[in-house]
Image 1 (cartoon, rainbow, N blue to C red):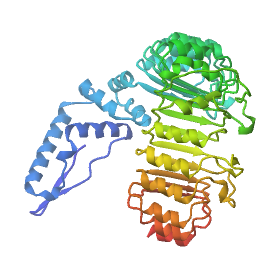
Image 2 (cartoon, rainbow, N blue to C red; image 1 turned 90 degrees about the vertical axis):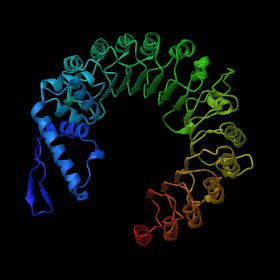
Image 3 (tube, helix red, strand yellow; image 1 turned 180 degrees about the horizontal axis):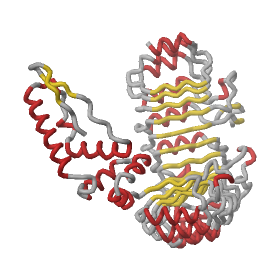
Image 4 (cartoon, rainbow, N blue to C red; image 1 turned 90 degrees about the horizontal axis):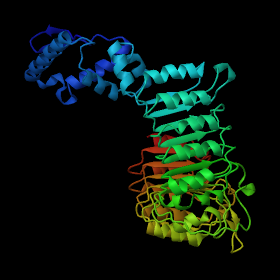
Length: 497
C-alpha cells in the first residue's frame, strides 16, 4: 500500500495510515513487509531528520518493488517462506484465493491437515482433498460431536484413499470414527513411513487390525489406544515387543486389556519412554485385578521417562507395580488412585529418579498398617522427594476423596508440603481438596522464589488473610481459585490492588 506524506510546517511530516487491503491479502502483505523491512529498521519518527531521510528511501524501495513485482512474479522461494510462516488455517485458505501460483505453492508445502464433520460424501471428498495436498505428513480426522445429519463418516474405503494418496504420512490420529474396522487398518499397513497412530473411540477395531499395522508399519514408535472396546488379545503387543521400536504406548479405557496383558510387551519395555495406562469405572471394580496371577517376570524399563497409571489395583510383585521398582530415569510421574502403593517403595522410587521434574498424585484414604484411615503417603515421602529430586518443578496433589471435615485423612501435613516447596524450584503447584492448607501455608508460599502458577481447588481453610500473603509472591503470574468458599470480596480486592 501507499503511505501519503504531507508537509506540516518545517519540523516534520504527517503520516497517514496505509490503505487497508482486502482480507485475503493481509497475511501476504504482513509476511512480505517483514521480509523487506525487518523490525530492526522500523524505528519511531522522533529520531530526527536523518531517520526521516532513511524512511523516505525505504519508501522509494517499496514503491520500486511494488512496480517491479506483481503477485504472479514474486520468486517462488519467497512465496514458500511466506506460506511456512502463516500458521492459521483460515489465513492459509484465504491466501489460496489470491492467485493460482499461491494456490499451488500452499498445496505443495502444507504437511498437516485436520478434518472434521461435514465431508459428505466422505470418500469422494477425501480423494479431492488428498489429491491436492500430496505432501501431507500429519493427518487428524475427528468426528467429535458428529450427528447423522452431518453425512457419512470416514469408512474403510476412506482409509484406502488415505494410504494411496499420502505416501509421506507419518502421523495419523482418528477420533470417534465409528465406521472404520480391521480392513481399513489393513490399508494403513501400506504406509511404510507411519510412525504415530492414535485411535480414540474406534468401536469396530479389533486386535486383528492393530496386528496388521504392527506388522506393516515397521517404523511405528507411537501407539495410542483409547476407548477401543473390541481390542482384546495382545498378539500385536507381543509382536511389537519383539520386533518393534515403540517409544510411546498409551492404553486407556480398553475393557479387554488388563495390566497383566501388558506384561507380554516383554523386551519392548527396554525402549519405551512413555507409558500411560488407565481403566474406566470405579477403582474398586477394577477388571485388571486378578488375584494370585501366576506369572513372574524380569523386565527392564531403564529408558522410561514418563509413567502414568490410573485406577488400578496392585499387589506386591503383581501387575504393573513392577514399574515402580525398576524405573530409574523418570521425569514425569502421574499416579491416579492406584491402590496398593507402599510408602517405602515410593521413597525408593524417588531416591532412584533424581531427574524427576513433574509429579501428580491423586490419593484416597485407606486402612493403613498402623490402623489409621488415611492416604498411604505421608510427610516422610515428601521429605524423600525434596531431598532426592532437586529438579522438581511441577507438583499436583489431589485429595478429593478425603472428607473436608477430616483433615487427618490426608497423610501429608501443611508443614510437609511447605518443606517440599522450600527445598525444590517449584514453578507450578496444584492443590485440590487440601483442607490441611491454612493461611500460614499461604504465607510460606508467598516467599517462594520460583512459584509462577498456583491453583487451589476446594481448599476450604484459606481465608482473605491468605490472599494478603499470596500477593507478596515475587514471581507469581497465574492464580486460579475454585471452590475456596472462605475467600470473599475483601481478599480479591486486596489481590487486585
